[in-house]
Figure 1 (cartoon, helix red, strand yellow):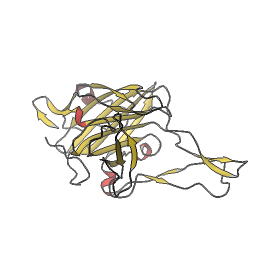
Figure 2: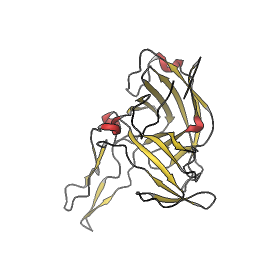
Figure 3: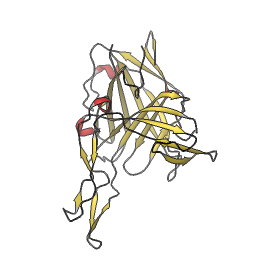
Figure 4: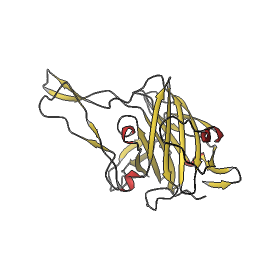
Length: 266
């Protein structure tokens, strides 16, 4: 992030956006553009409405984000971004069209009466994430094969939105299997990339519970809302859905002092 006489300018090749539209697909940004953040003395209210005049003054940036993996490989969604900052904090606004609102559940435990056991449901929440360069060569494509680390803010409509936070985590990319927990993927060139996605230190914003061993109702939530702490509580976020569109506001200190967070210099 660089200060200019018009505000703070982001080089968008150093950021990636992700949207999950209901249960359909993830998408990833892969284009170079500029996002200019305007300075404000009065920060916006994080209410998922973006009604402040500040947001109208901020220059919008529309990016097309695409899914790199099957199914629906190559499917795309447009995300409109705006940014603002104070002396201490960065604020982002993301808006995208979504005809369905999915924020009431996620992978619910569903009782199978025949098997007398719970099975994971196919209900999915809406999700948005944005990533910033942390270390190594940054490429907005998760499957580029570059060895790098990203600072990732992941908002989830069911699991994190009620508490007013986004999950703060890192993505670490390796060309060979690392000693830490990571999942293997194949790049478009056919090589392998290993991706680790640890959460930042502190209490997590969501709590996962195993399926009950006996019948506790036909539907039991797999995830419980929790309040984050430490570095895991760095990113505040609130989204609102209305008339076929999500409006999401995010905020974080320009510099948290934590090694797992990108510092934004102005």
